Length: 538
Image 1 (tube, rainbow, N blue to C red):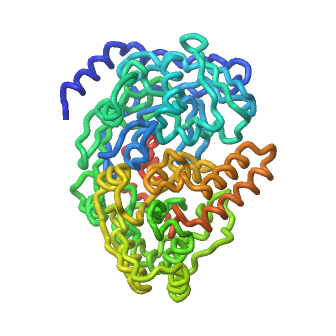
Image 2: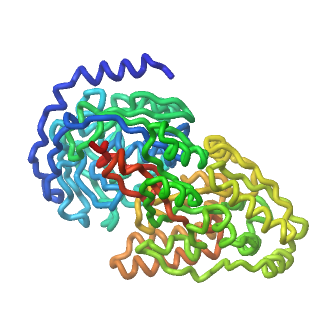
Image 3: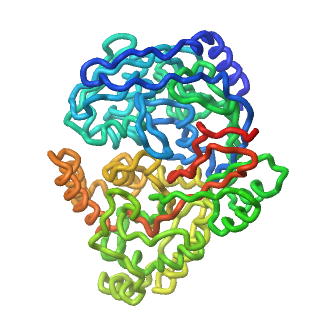
């Protein structure tokens, strides 16, 4: 780690320290965005104490807030960066963040937005309209799309600077999920990032946001440390002045940290289901949240026979999903009956189901002319996936499919997939609820031309994908909620039938903490933790 880099950031932060005492102004949004004001922060002065956290994911993937799917980084960025409008990860309630108010009319095609008075980045520089335009343009750039491009480029047209503190957003059409979507369009400082290489964006040492915390140190695969951002004057009020998130990918290690009594770590996400009783018996609080978090399969449709949907369906039908759930997550999950989890407000049971039927799976493979099939299954090494992929191998071997497992660390998995790895099938964990809850977003996280899996398997180049994309576009541009829902249900049925990227199961997510040491926590239905209300017990 370059310690001089961190020292330089501190120097720049203190250069504009006076910004931290500027009160939030009561500036109303103009025209379409005149609405309720953002609440005034009590600032960071009352924050006190330090909290250690165990995170069950690695911290060595990209930290670019507009171009990452890293569970660790995305959870951290809810504390570091702000959108114009954000939403609580606990209940998804939207609130004005860098914008001075919530929009009054989200169906309008032009939104004029005033920025929060006195808003500043952690290096002390003010947040300006130029930063908003820079960030929006990154998302909308067709020549170099980022991960979040898929969630905006169909409906958001442009951002235009009005003056230093005001921006006009232009929509292509009224989009019902626009306000929620803006919570993932984090505003990045143009003076730091403009013209930089991809590696600069991805490096956590370069993270500069306007949120309540800033990074104070990090070591790959070990920890990331945070301290309060002295320049923050927004609506949130951190209760602690510093925290350290410790990488703890091994499930047994996370349990030990919480129960040892000497580790100083009172909080952990990604609690293994078979440790729940142990933790409760030790006096810890263990809380669950229903989740879209999935174990999924992605097939390499650029290779035969995986370009045949009957083969994909057969391999999916050969998996005993309930057995997989029992052996890998102690029964705390549900076999997938749709792309969306059953607790989703947009859930409907898919027309195509993959109930366990090995005899039918063997017949479907034979009917497709597939014999003596050999395949390589690439997977991450997240704690519970090792048991899951072994269960899949056993089931596929049982129907005559010679299965080779290739289980690697998460960063290696990501880089190999991005490089077009020759694996036949990917097994992955994923939870697009990190970005939002609407059905369109959850589908496009996987089924967009910028998604890593779609770039890997080339399915985006097929007529079948073209038909699906047309359905999704019709759904988001529909004139009524009824038509939107109907077309989205059709799209979900297509996704199930094609079985290109599809869940085997959905699982609950568990968070645990020691109530004698910390309070103010809630379990999330996304990976990571939300520490804005967490504080030490007196």
